[in-house]
Image 1 (spheres, rainbow, N blue to C red):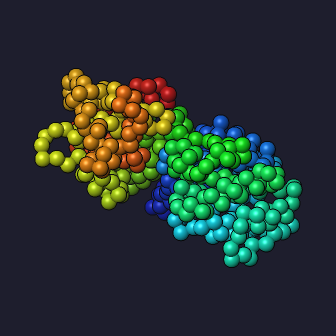
Image 2: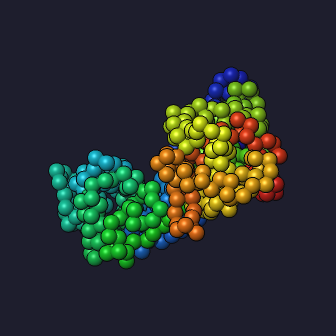
Image 3: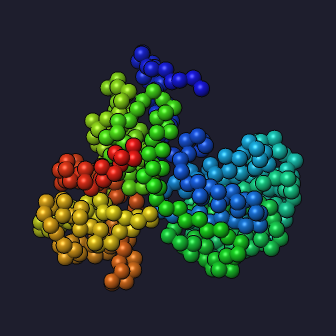
Length: 414
């Protein structure tokens, strides 16, 4: 592969900015060389496709990379296994069973024809309405040499209960009749029950794959793999800060990396530093202000100086598990650092309760009983937003920032 050329003219810098925008655009990944991590999940999905008659439910928080994973998992073997035919449709609140599955049939046929395998997809799509049995009968016509996959993304947005019930019936028919088409349902959910009603009746046909937040090493790979395709480099400081701010969310990793790289390009530099990252944080706040400002204000508004902003910032900085949940005890360290002195749970316990109620805009989700409560941001992207607002408002000084973002551990990993 030819090494990237160092820019020397304004046109070269412009072309580099286009390349950075393409590589770090934050959209779901559709190129295998840009996909990082998730080996266990990729393997599990591929095995399910090969088994046939079984289907995948891929679920997790918003922003953890579900769509990217479903885009890419089969491509690693797409050249050696030429019989993959992959159709993707997006569910929505307007969908009923017929609209969803007629679209799926049409897309699968179009993909087969477009890839030169028209003989594999010799089935009908010209229906006004369909039943599960009709869909199953059409897909039985697919060549046994094919490996057809139907991905229904954003399945959580389908609100028609009949559509979900009939889709479950369809999966059951696929299983009972050993249909070779694999269905992959992708959606935002904490568990399978939130996506599929009465899923117990088809559990034997389903492989459940919960997708957690990414490991820090995987987030590092996202940055390094993309930067390696250009002449630009991220300084170690910039790398650990992006990883620390991302809180396991690959979308944010890409977004912040892109804005930082663009700032470096504007200043005709190839090394991306914390100076560029400061500009990137400002850009992120500007871009997301409409989305998050009102929720932040509702959560922290008060007529008294009771440190709601500091408490919410401490929640955003708390150590959390791979699903984004933290306990009150996890908030003590960041809250103490922010307040510049030892603090106990009693100092912010009321705030946690407020944040998880309508009064606080339900900015946090609360799970568990009184003694085993866990919290998580309702919108995962609110978490880095709160951290950046705290940094810009100088609510944490440099030493506290280094401690809370675990600078030492990340520098060792770079």
